[in-house]
Length: 282
Image (cartoon, rainbow, N blue to C red; front, side, top):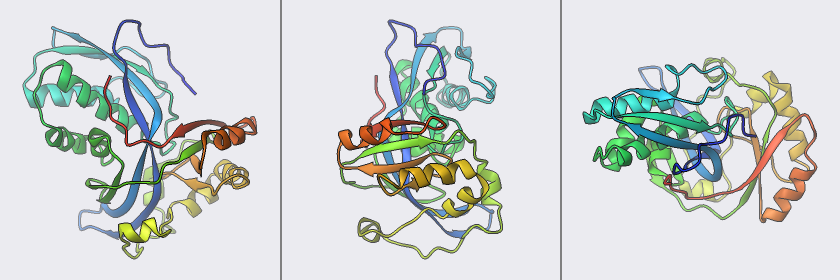
């Protein structure tokens, strides 16, 4: 599913893992308009990959072109600039990106790329920030960034920034990309969205509770997502990750997941990955 040029030889490769939301509830709305969420982040072993060339000129550049995302708007560039300015670093960097995750798919690719940029440059620039400081910087970039900086599966509340480590059953996942870019802001403003889910506990979730409140809306507004879920349901319970549009199913073994992947219809793309507590290092 890669859409970019290979990373340059000789540079360490830093993984930026994908995530799945194993469930996603909205339990209320704050006075500032943000929604209060409950979710579980499952990190995957598959994701984007980055490489960094530190420079001494203080300039930050993304070398790899990303369709539809200007360099100035890219979260990796914003993350690098935020770290440089916050830590008082005078060095620069050239950022190479192997973009393997679809944008707008609910897999957290942009947030993960930003988190890996913070972690990598903190080390390469010798900025000296602690992980909790990097997580605080990440929250300024997006609600999902801290979980990737923390690099652990997590139970999340608030806007997704209050994290608690969670041990999840080992599983292999087949992720299917229907080829649609879902607009998250439009979904959050949709009057049909359920915003009053009863709060649940980790024990409730591990006992089988939890659903994705965005799934009915996304299936209704994006027919390819509904079609992908119908196909995947033949092999495993199909679920929507985040606000979509990617869907996934859990399997007990890699063989079962890859057997299903081999049957994937031509109009979809997909990949198989093991769930992982992961860590974003070279």
